[in-house]
Image 1 (tube, rainbow, N blue to C red):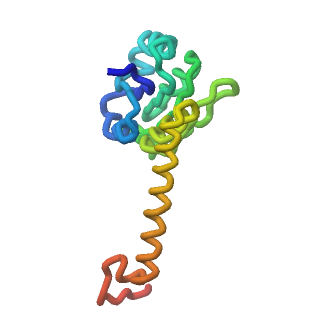
Image 2: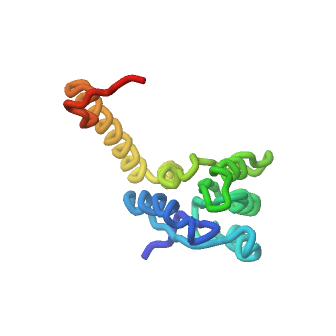
Image 3: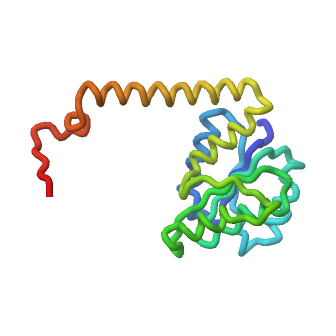
Length: 180
């Protein structure tokens, strides 16, 4: 087994259903990764130790997801020399996820965290792959192929919509839509 290049971390196992989308992307591109829990508030020593040593273990990018106050990505970025991608997560104690978004987005000067949309772990995975592709021509080709496939899918959907019309495309054939 090759050493992990990306570390996917989260504040709690309750974040795993969201963070699994980043893992799926990394697996799709064949990027070696690790997944673990590092709580910013309940395991501070573990967070500091993990963050300071990740690059020494060969990690190139850290994807950190957290809900609520969402301090995990910023605290990791404060002590790690690696790029950190923050994934804000709407949690049970969250204010519609805005607290998480702002906690990750509003980092002080000198401590950047790349921030994706609320629950945007898939984009975090894609961004991690893109970062790695800068130094890996094979991965860069795979990313280019992925983007080409996305474009092709949109073009097919557009052609289908234009041919069928909106009502048929949406499966509303024979239905009259009343305006209010």
